[in-house]
Length: 106
Image 1 (cartoon, rainbow, N blue to C red):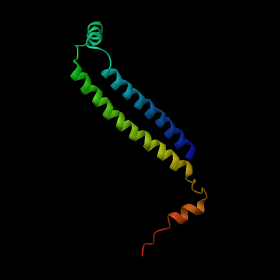
Image 2 (image 1 turned 180 degrees about the vertical axis):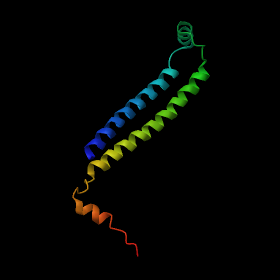
Image 3 (image 1 turned 180 degrees about the horizontal axis):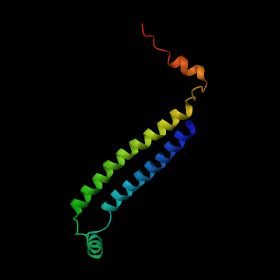
Image 4 (image 1 turned 135 degrees about the vertical axis):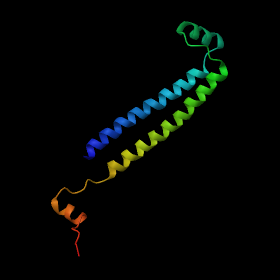
């Protein structure tokens, strides 16, 4: 069970790492380039031209999302560390009886 949980957490960690990089790259892209380049992109791809102020707002939104993704990343690192250090519970029948004693009806 512990191995499956660690595998799942490591998969989510990789996704979170990719998300941080993607959001940071999106913010960087929104801030980069000249007005001339952005007009050419809009003309070639069809979406309406977005001015510098609108692109900056978009970049700031991507920055905020990247911060959230970094928090997720830290959470996965810490959770993996905790799970790796934890011990698996004993799997004999005595341990479940001790953990869940019978309830008396008196």
